[in-house]
Length: 61
Image (cartoon, rainbow, N blue to C red; front, side, top):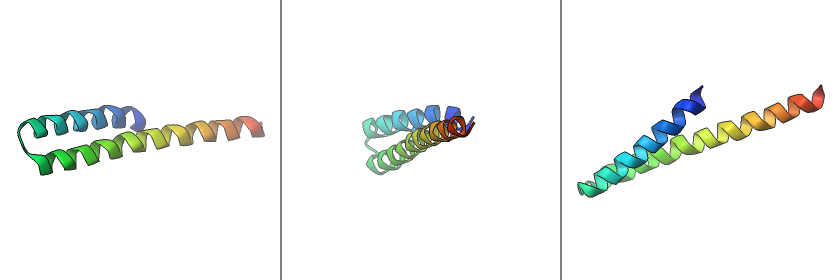
């Protein structure tokens, strides 16, 4: 569930960063880009962790 929310939120933050760059707000763009990358990285890490957990469960049964 959290993965499904993190991906659109991360993409939204990256789009917001591009809009901040167009408005010449460089500091805001940097912060938005960092937040977006954090959310997308967290979603990727949770997806990977879930797949590893499922593989371990499948091995033990």
